[in-house]
Length: 346
Image 1 (tube, rainbow, N blue to C red):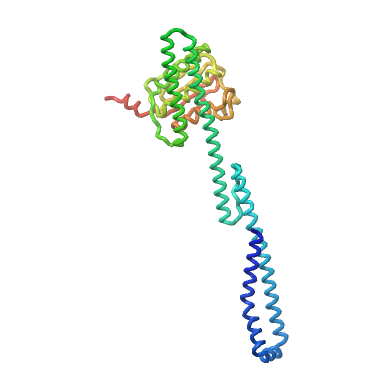
Image 2: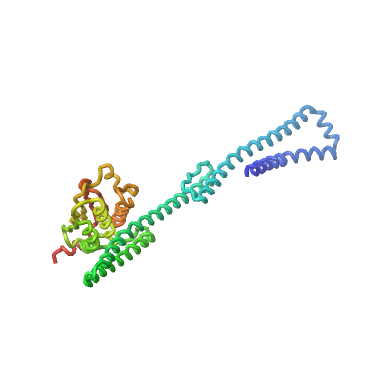
């Protein structure tokens, strides 16, 4: 490319010299052939001036050609280097590199192409991160219901009482249905990108279902879950997301806490607050400020609380650690208008 730029510029300068000089030399040649006496008279009248004029024209032609070569070389370097750098960035993007810095060459067209490549790299980075997060989120969200389902099946396998088998089988079927809803919710969140309208759900029904689901695990650990607070609360959230957030808090308490787990629901202004606490030592002071980061964990996958906070925020709420020792997690959700209608006088 550089050689082509130099060649084209030199040819342009040579053509300009030819256009200017050709008529002059053609006129001199015509006079020399057809009227040599007039040319001799002109030369005799001003020999030195004519020679000087011819020399100046020739010198200017050489200077113009040299200037053209110099300008062509500089322009070639100015244009070829950004093009080379741009080609290298395109090759790196094609090889899968996601961090491409934009090029600032001062050439608007090249800089625009570089910006497009940089934005493409950023979109590629976000897409890869979203795929990794989806895989991690799916793994964590599916693990909890699968664990609970396995416990129910173990209960069925260990008993000969048909009534117990019937009861555990019904609960297992409900858990399979919940597992299906979790998968559907994951796929739906991927397709819609979190812009869906929030649904409403009864808080009592979700907590009651979770209490039944987690009862075997807590009984096996010789612990219990106590639910208290206000009843009949309806909140803005999808049932699957709300169930997953509270399941994460129960799982976290089962793994790292001690004693009875308290689930307390109450109103707080326009919000409904669900607090989950236990009698354990709580969260270490060094971990507490970073407890919701994906890379921070005191055990397990390190994704549970981070995912729970993301789910809460995607449903218009928030999840906070309001007390570290003993640990108290609070889930804040918007109260549905159905609550106001239920409590309003007829």
